Length: 211
Ligand SMILES: C[S@@+](CC[C@H](N)C(=O)[O-])C[C@H]1O[C@@H](n2cnc3c(N)ncnc32)[C@H](O)[C@@H]1O
Ligand SMILES: Nc1nc2[nH]cc(C(=O)O)c2c(=O)[nH]1
Ligand code: SF4
Ligand SMILES: [Mg+2]
Image (tube, rainbow, N blue to C red):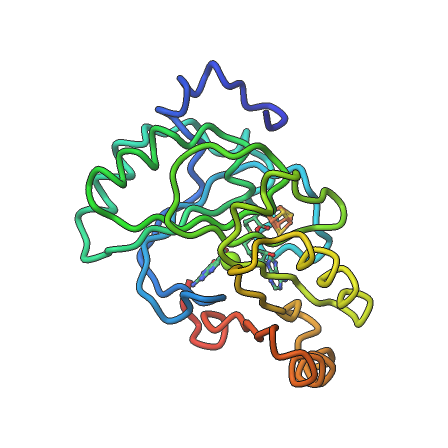
């Protein structure tokens, strides 16, 4: 459980620490370009130095919120797909939230580091492994998409180590770390041209200046 957020307080996942929810375009990975309603949960104990969502790390800043109110908002717009992200969403029991979203006929996508046990039902799992707190063994077999962040050329070896553990049909992406994107892009391009099992994912929403 995340530091400071007691599971009992969350009533088995009926309440979750909500940072923000908004309707936008999935910017990254396999589903890039697809409209999706984002649900961002607070709390992460991984601590990536370049994390673009550091404001989510402390769950105490985000009071437990009834998942029903979020689901009502998500189903009041035209969204057909939901992205559950964070923070690290797998810190929390996601069975109630995802079960209810599925019952409403929505597609459910997950963004995760895989560093906590799985709960909930998902149509698509994006696994973005982190050296500081690597995925649990179980996460690899659940990934539809492996998205490795590349900060320097040393990350190619980390990418291959993770790719060796996912299923045969899992899509493979290298995503430049945003602040060094211009610097690392030439190496990523050459890497992917030489190893076409990999694809490039860029954070298109940042270029579009949307959330
Ligand atoms: C903020 S994280 C939240 C979900 C989960 N904690 C995770 O890391 O997968 C969402 C996605 O953004 C990626 N990401 C975060 N900061 C980034 C950055 N500076 N540049 C590129 N990708 C980044 C993460 O690797 C992850 O794929
Ligand atoms: N548009 C948009 N696409 C995204 N894909 C993954 C994101 C995330 O922060 O998990 C993200 C995000 O924050 N915004
Ligand atoms: S695991 Fe995800 S939310 Fe946590 S620090 Fe890393 S990128 Fe940020
Ligand atoms: Mg983001």
